[in-house]
Length: 307
Image (cartoon, rainbow, N blue to C red):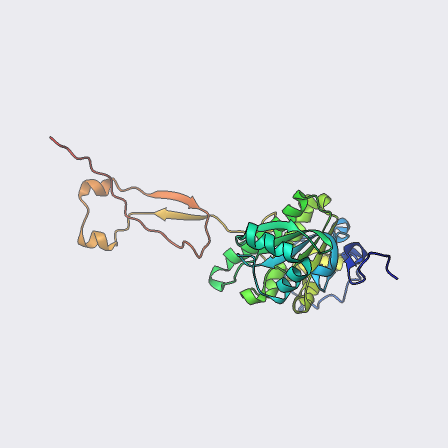
């Protein structure tokens, strides 16, 4: 029998088994004589971090935690089963705050409200990106910041426990497996740097995602040398920077005098101006999809004489 005043449908996050307490499953079978992607485990066994992590499948509004995460759209009025369920259970005051006061949240950003009628102190609302294969780097970066800023906000508000939903949505075209990689490595890196601030992080996955998280979580949170070894073979090459953010290499763009330029073919430059042409170099940090090559013909400014 539940104590008086306790909702029997609520689940205390501290009652959930930690990742460290879950028995490792059967490790995946590696191909014969495989070549490892990483020569050493990118994420070593860390029992302290593993005790903070929980993997759970269910309705996030049932969890009793300091904070839960709500994935929504830019105008905070997304119509989806999860959003409708959360807004209905939290009560009309949450809708009033979102629609009348906050009104908007950019992709990759977060806003925070009270939990109102839910069994949580705070709700962190965030907007996941739409996925387009042509701009996948931008989508990966935005998703990384959804998770990272959510965790940063939890630390800022001195939360000890937080329930993270799957922010990348299939309805926005985001591949579930790629989204899980971003989520897991961002959480892992955050706990490596600021783990002392959070004591419990519950990864809440629905039926469509839970099998993916069960498969990938051991790669980022290994519990044994065997899981470490598997991670060396199964993790992707690009694991982002120290924070888990997708890495974009600086690309050097050279601005040169192109002798084949059509302008010069039809309108040759005077000899003096040809001698004053210069080769300019600059370092630009950008997505490969944004800038591929830039060729500019530079002409010096002429001085005008009024004599």
